[in-house]
Amino acid sequence: MDAKAVEHYLRDLQGRICDGLAEIDGAKTFTEESWDRPEGGGGTTRVIADGNVFEKGGVNFSHVTGTNLPPSATESRPELAGRSFRAMGVSLVIHPKNPYVPTSHANVRMFVAEKPGEEPVWWMGGGFDLTPYYGDADDAVSWHRTAQEACEPFGDDVYPRFKKWCDDYFYLKHRQEARGVGGLFYDDLNEWGFDRTFAFMRSVGDAYLEAYAPIVRKHKDDAYGERERQWQLYRRGRYVEFNLVYDRGTLFGLQSNGRTEAILMSLPPLVRWDYSYQPEPGTPEASLLTDFLPAKDWLAGQPAR
Image 1 (cartoon, rainbow, N blue to C red):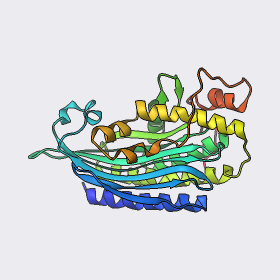
Image 2: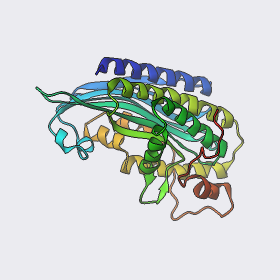
Image 3: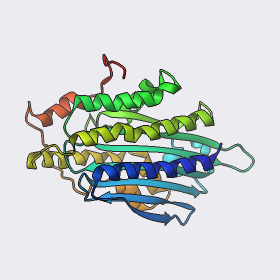
Image 4: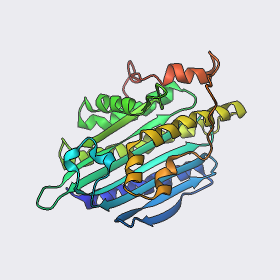
């Protein structure tokens, strides 16, 4: 296990993603803030705000250490309780201005649980997912095609397995609806050995910008009005609900006394909730709920690239 190689990759990934998104925005770059955690470790948070394209975006690198894993990490692995740990990763959420540009999320991470006299227990996790406000089937197909291609070198079963995991994970049980159109999600992955698992982390991390940039460029200049803007703000509420109620990364960061500003950078700058709101049948807003959010095989019948 080469933790230094993982950290080097993650820092480089953070820089490449920020550079790529700033180029698309054209007006703003990412500000950078480094922070230290009293219990051990720290990180670098990069944020873009009020740009031409991105209303708010954060790309966070963290590498933290501690003497005990928090409950969010041990609830499914109670045998690890009492071990010291190190956790490193890149996590990002991008909230665009234009309602026709989807919000996107990605992260790749590694955990190591250690105990004197015993072999370290490690695993990796991550993925990326897309949250549109207005459905576009071509975007969904392109996004999933890139996800599939990132998985292909690791076996034909990998994309279907982690695509389903994403559909199941990013599901708001209290709303009985998906957060978006999915992508990839995996966690506690170590069954392939370190080298292959690290290669998969790199494949997923490198695929994010390849998947997202064309969609942003396609829609960033689409015309929209107040109706579309208010729908975007309303749907952002679902994003907030998921991150504060279900997201394991958010819970881990808060329970391990991470930097709150970096942990909550995923939240959008503006959001709204309307009591018992339902869009009118037959509208593009209603189509998002009926035609795009229910989990489906977006690549069924699609020719390979």
